[in-house]
Image 1: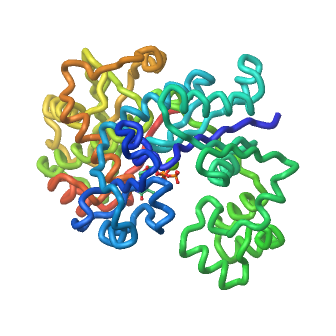
Image 2: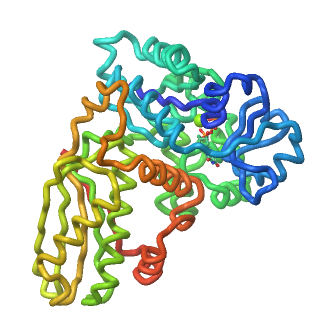
Length: 406
Ligand code: TTP
Ligand code: MG
C-alpha cells in the first residue's frame, strides 16, 4: 500500500515567532541572530528581509550592510522551543507517528489516519490552518509516498505552500531540479556530479546504477534510488524507543577514573540531547560497564521524576559506577541509557504545561540553547572542558548509539 507521508516545516520560524510576539514587526525585515555589529551569524530572517539578499548563516555585519533598516533581534531559544512543543501537539492530534526533525519541522505518517480523519490532503490543510489560527504562524507542507519526496515537496512553494507529490507528477517535478536537492548530496558530491555533466535529477535518472556505484560507492545506489523517487525510510517516533543510550568501546582498556568520569559525562550529554530531540523524558537510568575480561555489569536506578537533563543522568550514573567500585579492573566498554519514558499522551494533554518545580528553568533554557547551537554549528561549538578533552582522546570511532525499537 502506498504510504502517506506529510512533512511540515515552519516559515522563517524564529523570525515569525518574533513577529507574532511583537506585532509591530509584522511586514518588516526581521533578522534574528543578535547585534549586527557583533561577529555572529544570522539564524534566520523574515521573508521581507530575504528580499535584500539576507539569509541564514550569513555574517550579521553583511546582513546589516544589505539591509541597514532591518530589525536585528537576539535568539530566544527557549521561546522557540516552547512554540515548537505547541506545534508538535497540533501534529499529534492526527497521528502518534510524528518524527520531529528539529524545532520547526516534522514528518507524519498519515497512512493509518485517513480512516479516522479523512484524506491525508485534507489533514494537511487542517494542520496548516490550525497552526495559523491557534498559533498565528505560517507553515508549509509536502505530502508524498515517502520522506524524501515529502520534504522536497514542502520546500517547493514556501512560504505557506502545500505541494502534493504522487506517482503521476513525481517525474515531472523531479526532472529539472538540481542534484543538490537529493537527500545526502552536499557540496562535494554536487561538484563531482557537475564535473560528470550531471546537473539535474532528470539527468541522474538516466544513468546506470552500476556506474553510480562505481563512482560513489554505496552512496551511488542511494542517489539512484532517490533520483527515482524511492525511499523506504520509516517515520520514527519516540514511542519506537524503549530506551535511548550511548556506549563506547575503548581502543585501549583503561582504569583512569577521572577519564572514565569524563566519558560518562559525555555519554550523558549525548543521551540527554537525543531524549530532547524526541521529546522524551525517562525515569530509569542504566549504567553498563564491561571490563577487560569481558565481564559485563549493568546497574540501574529509578528516579521519582522523569528527566532529560544530562546533569541528572550523569550524577546518577556516576553514583552507580562508584557503588560498584569501577576501575578496579580495566574498563573496556562504558554505556549509559535512559528508559521508562513518560507517556507521550500526557505530553499531548498538558496544554498549559510548565516545567516541574524540581527542574530549573534556567537549565532548561541553557539546554535548548546548546542543542540549537549544536544543530547549527556542530557538536564542537559548545562543550564543557572535560567533555572536549575526553572527546579528543577517544575520537568518535567507537561511540555508538543504542536504541531498542519494540
Ligand atoms: P529552517 O526551516 O531552515 O528556516 P526557516 O524556518 O527560518 O525558514 P524557511 O523554512 O521558511 O526557509 O530553519 C528553522 C530554524 O532553525 C530557523 O528559523 C532558525 C534556525 N536556523 C539557524 O539557527 N541557523 C541556520 O543556519 C538555519 C538554516 C536555521
Ligand atoms: Mg522552516
